[in-house]
Image 1 (tube, rainbow over the protein chains, first blue to last red):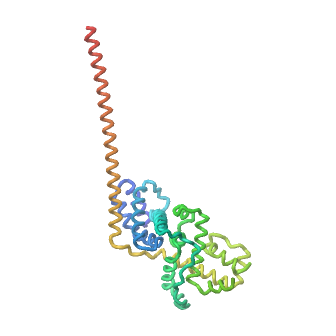
Image 2: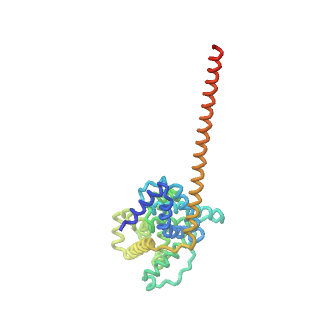
Length: 193
Length: 118
């Protein structure tokens, strides 16, 4: 069986040579994954759809510049992150609602149940909810780094921020997620300070 | 070192991107509260990493929308390429016609000179 990365490399080479079927195959192979990332970054279906379409359009136009150092899907993650950052920027401007990283998360959590928290599925559901509730700027960094494993430098590039800022946002996001998922210790800490 | 200082450092060192200094490690080794917090960060990272395997079902019609936009861009590109190719062809034809015209004028002038000399 051909490993997916070799398969993708062959399709990329064919698409670069002008084979539109090959590009279509690349889209088919990756679009659900790219949509998932776009949904995680934007937090809603409508924006995610727009971001995905824009991302593939950019990929198609810029395919000649793709040097194949990373997998095609990783390249798509970067483009998607960039498109999502642009979309979220527009959305924030449209709402005149500057995102404030210091704004506390709405506390809508159900009563903490230690037994339920031990359940991995429930934890995952709560994690998804906690991610949705993070401010866009924090969510983008933690999703790209801790879920999709993109390097700090790539994240900073695509989001148009410095590497240091990307790291600060990442640590802040992790802290908030931990406090949201495991509130008991967080509360104890808060009382102790 | 106080628990609050460790707590601030944990999100950075939990994935090994930054190295914990010796004082911090010694504190965590002996402090149950900080050990618990570190364990929570590790569990959080594992859960985040696990999300990578989750793929959402895209809304129906998304694939065809993507392909339609790409196809449209491809057609525009082909059209531009065709037009720029035609421009080159037109310019070439004009240049050839101009050259032929100039050669004709030269030949005609020479022919007249020869006729006058005769």
